[in-house]
Length: 446
Image 1 (spheres, rainbow, N blue to C red):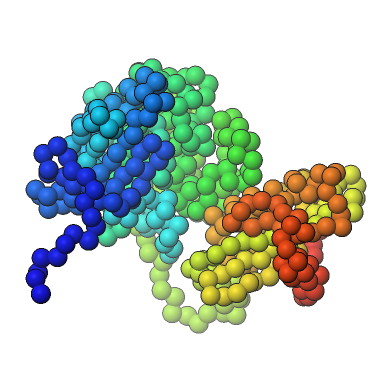
Image 2 (image 1 turned 135 degrees about the vertical axis):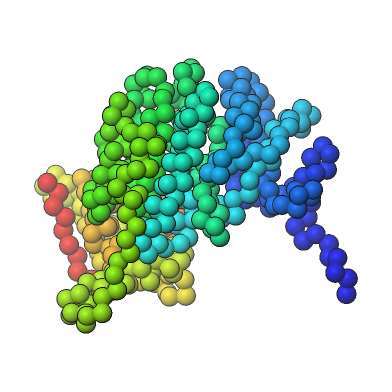
């Protein structure tokens, strides 16, 4: 058999001189930008082939086109171990596309990486923090200084085999003292409050965003995920109110480190100063305890282990069945029952929850459900959104108390059971009425 086999990826494109090829494998991208897997045939290296589509609508927006061109100029000038490198770029006028040949992130962005893997300590987070700060210091020390303006886990890429992280996606980057528009920010929850007040954009806005990234890495919660309404969450972020996740950072040194990044702009430290923070200096490893474990300690371990094990089992869906209860004290209580479908594990029933429009749904889920059934922080957000939607719709005066309704994570729509067919209707009603050993609990609505 010949040692030479046909290319399994399939070449879908080449650059002008044939040095780089593009495979038909998408490894990332946002809106009008797509990143494909590619190959450098001269140096024998895998690369990322970034392709930005210039639609008719895009070409009408001169400022945005100027921003795209600026991104190419900025990235081409940067050479640092913790910055995504751009090796070449060109524009195809006929196809209306901007191409960039960049580093290939072998493990994707840091947000997805954390969702796929479970950390046993904060050592990796500290390592990533140091690298991100070194990358920011390089940008902020550039002549003229460069402000990234969109620091978030989705724009930080990691090579899982080496642990090296790199800042990427410079489409919002700007030079210091350059004019900018505050409404161009893609992620308000990561944006420093002073940006919305019209203040001059400085390096400190990246430090604020970095602090939010650290918070997300430690808690695995997206900032302001406690608010089901996205617009309301953005309002809270823009007003400078800290996310609830900050209260759940157990390590006081880590919490203080994050808080240093979130203080008013005039008090925020630089990236270099943060590199000397006590949080990043901690390198101690918990000692191995050779003494016998007590029954109390064992009990605490057993509370934690099931959640960690369940987190490793991918869930296929979340399903809620609810109905309106009799109005009490000017509130309309909604009875909701939740099923979590685990991979190869059937359906797991969860306690009945009685909610209203006044309930803090995220807190209820975290306190009553998450620990016992292994819900990750991302799962909590999904379930909270589903419950919030059901409670809102069932609170309408047009909804009958005699009917059951369903919503699941696949279609995200509140559906009356009568619209699901006779078999599913009977099955759902039986599940709602015959499942025993469930202990309903009332929430304090005050």
